[in-house]
Length: 335
Image: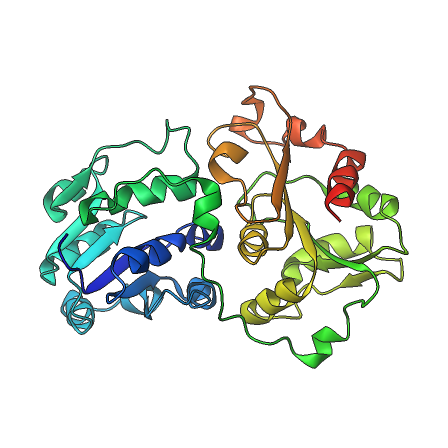
């Protein structure tokens, strides 16, 4: 097997996508323990990427993308990359990688711009596959000689999220020592179908106050949307807009569980081994078969039916049919 020294994983989209890509770094290190693994991502995913002990360096595409192409090429050359894996296809990055002289350029053949920029093409379709996103990502390792069908249980062991910072004392004091500390991440910033604030309100009412300390997370803007609906009880704490991403990761790591739609925080909680419960629509490709959280204590709820009624927009009735009682039963069975 050839020896790969400096490998660059490129994924410049959202947090959840990045979380499900990070097991690749662990797999690469298992096969090539002397290699260095770099990750090309956006600024807002940096703190997630650097959680992994398998990632040796981060290259910030948010800083690079508007630079002159010669500067972009020079920056990439500084890392002596011999292999790039285009997990999330990006035409500009593909061109830069070729012009920077990267020897092995891996990408999917389904993007026509890869035909001229990649020399290791793989012919598989994400859109029509029954595999999970994390499993699909591993298919791009085949040119490295890593040709395995990884189970989701196996992939959990490759996260390597050992670099979580200690939680600041002001946030530690919010956590209960006697109750299950449960984070409800009610919104998705439009990245996923949502369960609805009314359902979360009923869930809060159902869960026993003497057993659950509940935290409402989100951005400040999201907090403005849910505060008037969900606050009022002493055991419900609003933490929206109070933490940066690194602090929020530490808070998730110190809590016991998290409930959300298919969002970044759900995947973070799953990767950290927390009780992560995702609420999903059955519509493809948003369904849990493709995007469910993977972790030792991760689970999901979905209406078991074939449906695509919400494809043109509007509320997902299949998600709304998942009752607060069903969600409460699921989390209490695990809690």
